[in-house]
Amino acid sequence: MRGRRIVIVGGGFAGLRLARLLDRRAWRRPVEVTLIDRTPYHLLRPKLPQAVGGRIACAVHVPLAALVSGTRIRVLDHEAAAIDPVARRVAWDGGAMDADLLVLALGSGPRVPSELAEEPGAVLPIWDFDQACGIRRRVQFLAEAARAGRAVDGDVVVIGGGFVGVEIAAEVQARLGRLYGHRARPTVTLVERRPRLLPRLSAWAGAVAGSRLARLGVSVLTGVSAAHVAGGRVHLGDGRVLRAGTVIWAGGSVEAPPVVAGSGLTDGTGRIPVRGTLETDRFAGVFALGDCAYVPGAGDEASEPSAHRAEAQAVTAARNIAAQLDGGQAVEHRPTRNVYVLALGPGYGVLEAGTLRAAGRAPSVLKELVIAQHLARLGGWPLLCGAVPRVILDTFRAAAWDTSPLADGAVRVGTARGWTS
Ligand SMILES: Cc1cc2nc3c(=O)[nH]c(=O)nc-3n(C[C@H](O)[C@H](O)[C@H](O)COP(=O)(O)OP(=O)(O)OC[C@H]3O[C@@H](n4cnc5c(N)ncnc54)[C@H](O)[C@@H]3O)c2cc1C
Image (cartoon, rainbow, N blue to C red):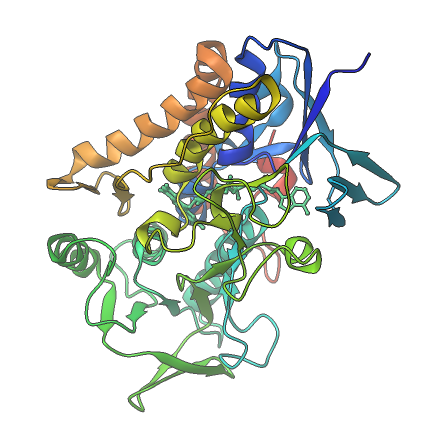
């Protein structure tokens, strides 16, 4: 007799943590846990800004197989092409799987306003590994070409002064600093439509981030929107125009991947509405968590993209899935206050957790420790011990790439695959 089948789609922060929690449980009757992801890797997305800045490379991607070794979790490397929430079926090119309980943890993607730019590639979102590699290569290539006196624009504009935007602006600026030394370098401008940076954090955090960016040399424009991007120019709402060879989108709004919307699961927010138990309202036995889901009425902070929040939801979902399969009382998810730890370039960070605040080197170390703890919790200390030397090795490798000259027209930095070795 086959065990009751729990199928989790998405091996990110929410899905992978949930799979591990379910695997560890002592079940009354056997269950099978299957984790489906379109890539064979777990992406440490909070480290993407460092990858853009050339400070790390391969440590961004951790093979899923290593993270589930020694467990009974079955990992399938497929891209879900259709989800039938009534039949609780996931289909991919060439196959399908039915579930007793289906969990959607597919994450989200950036929602770039369609009116912002008509030209494809005029605005580069920063959300996945390939996008980070692409931006890194582009910034380096344009900077090298500008330095060699070619008629290219090495300037960078980052749109969005939330936590992603400030981290990216700091990393890109620090990287240009390493490439150029004391010579005049391309400019990095951060544009935020609200009156201050980090609008979801306190005014203190916004001011600290602003002065750190200013010290690094980033120009910060607040209270003004990027209205249109075309022909290497960013047209601002107040009539100013910025030149930019690279425009990076770090605006906050996100939506679930198209397969979720295509399956009729999302509402006007572009995400899957769920009850406090994290089960969908309309489809029994279908749970959704992490970035692709939100609890209506729980407030902005409860549904902003957050790895920390995705992992906390996995704990609630594990309890409620067990309650459905083994009997027991479902619990409501209580959103905890987000803990923000930002790395603003090498050796400097900002921490805000309620009234606890700190800035300087300690928060940037803490950020690394939080990620290390995430890895340790998922893969155990052996995995972590294997990862640390790789991070160190990789830091040296990335530094070597940074200083290697680029051949005319060629980009000699690691490919996406090379980074994952
Ligand atoms: C640059 C950047 C920096 C960030 N820094 C931080 C930070 O410091 N702290 C923090 O808390 N949050 C941070 N975040 C947000 C955080 O990374 C996300 O909120 C978190 O990853 C959400 O976890 P998740 O499990 O919902 O989704 P994800 O981690 O995105 O996982 C979703 C998984 O679903 C898979 N998937 C998607 N579509 C399909 C499909 N059709 N078929 C199969 N699999 C599919 C994906 O491959 C992925 O593995 C950052 C985000 C960005 C962009």
